[in-house]
Amino acid sequence: MIAESRLRRVGVVLAGGVGQRVGLNTPKQLLKIAGKTILEHTLDVFDGHPEIDEVIVLMTPGFVPDAEELVRRNGYTKVSRVLEGGASRTETTWRALSALGERECDVLLHDAVRPLIEPRVISECVAALGRYEAVEVAIPSSDTIVVAAPGPRGEIIRDIPDRSRLRRGQTPQCFRLSVIRAAYERALADPEFPSLPTTDDCGVVLRYLPDVPIYIVPGSERNMKVTHPVDVYLADKLFQLAENTAPALTDEQYRAGLEGRTLVVFGGSYGIGADIVTLARGYGASVHSFSRSENGVRVEDAAAVEDALARVYAATGRIDHVVNTAGVLHMGRLGEAGQHTIEETIGVNYLGPVNIARASVKYLMETHGHLLLYTSSSYTRGRADYSLYSSTKAAVVNLTQALADEWACQGVRVNCVNPERTATPMRLRAFGDEPAGTLLSPAAVARTSLDVLLSRLTGQVVDVRLSR
Image (tube, rainbow, N blue to C red; front, side):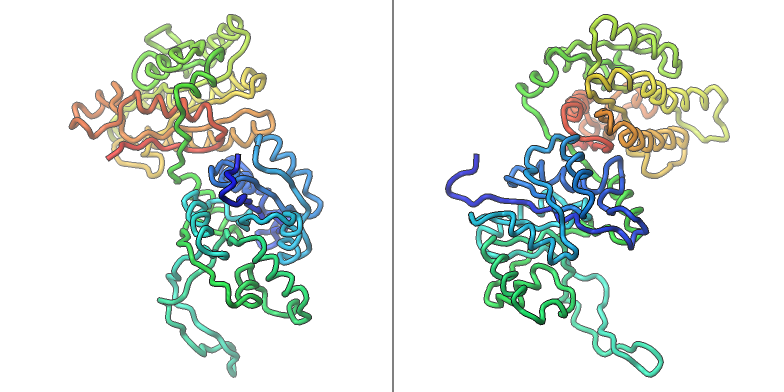
């Protein structure tokens, strides 16, 4: 419930673009990167932000049903309306402001195609609106800006402004509703407004309400706008390398999410897998563990994996979560590795997740369940002396994102946990004893794994870091 002492905070996601500069005939906000559409990534942040009360989406004409389906599929609780946008950014913004009614509120206008917006930026915007009626998000310009002018054979430089005073504007742009509405009313009444150079919402306030100061909140280089084809590639890589987190849950939330559910853990005999088994059972889940040492189930054996899952389903009638922590790490140069080492590494670390995914999807579709895989920090860059290990872990990340995309319509979530160096028996065998306090505990990784399983995340690489 919103406290009477503060205004309602509404995130307005402006998704009215078409995507012509990206080379698409459909809205670029419906383009998929990192397992989800750009619009979903953006809505994830706003719908999940504790300081946002309501979210409104302004969608490209003709694609409102597509956006409504994404809202339904993801179960966004704060998205109250999906409205049709206008023919221009100005018209789209005005439609949003008109839809908000007469009751005063704080409005955060955000480009849907800035999917990497950080919750920190939203929080600082909300705080700034407690002191100002208009807020811009901006970052310093790292490039020299030149003012061009026509020359005898092309453009020439007319001026080079002082870079220390220049900022690159981002979104959200945030306002008291009465202020931004008054600015637009004056703009729309000005016959010269349509012919003015394209301006943003802060530009409208600056021109038509010049006495209203516009406060600047520091933005982020990551808060990029997906506009050109190269931006799609960059955004995808930034999502892949992002330090994503899942909300930490309470004991009551763990029990509410796990009690009566069926959890299958491959590689559950020791290390992270064993701790997941113990934790989940403690919260009331029906947990079934399989591993080579525990009951002879090898993940590289597709028939064994299928049989294990079939037995669990026959006994419980449902499978809600499938977790694979099985893995092997062989050190050494590739040219010196034996054929058995190569086959085992690829078989356990990559073929295993493939087998588990293929065998489990039919059960997870019934429960709208979750497949959880594991990678390693080495997936971001191949490293000498464990090229096979790092490359198979990179493949698991790619598999995670692809399956999240493939299975989204069936309501199956797929994520990948990326622990920092962890004190597991596998690591001990490879590296020997390491200084105390430099490694994560398997129990900490296991708890984060439960956080991910009970979250709405999909297609994400979730980092677990050692607190220092």
